[in-house]
Length: 178
Image 1: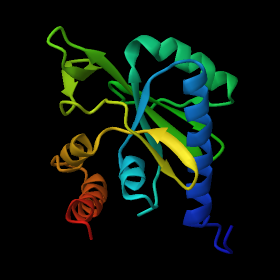
Image 2: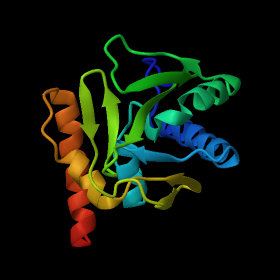
Image 3: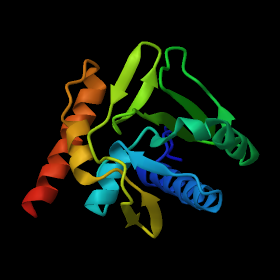
Image 4: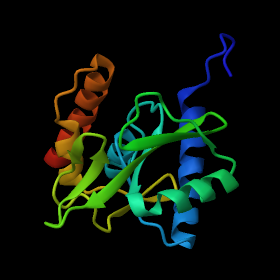
């Protein structure tokens, strides 16, 4: 920790990657499908940490929600829902926050997040079998085209919009080979 009480970004990233490594092992062991999305998915596609992250974002099938809650509790994760959450929930362990989005499949085959009022759509083909490695940690990740679509959505929250803009710039460089 620095003198001002702020923890270095590389320490936080290391803790988040260690937590993701254990989640990957746990979900593989219990045959639970999951997909990393958000900023960490950008980093896994880019092959390096591109910015600081507040949390880990994963998507899982809603049918596995109770099993996942049991497994996470056994691994010392504490359920930490936000007051306005809808279609997802949060957990914390030590300094790491985990956001878990839930998925369902429509009769048409489309994947969505069930919301109190409607459905949160995901890009077609987002949830394949893509696995990437970053600093020795493996993770299942949403595919690149779906991630680009996610990061290009308009956001009302200026902080989220800024992170998405930075992530979109990284993804554009990947596409151009820069």
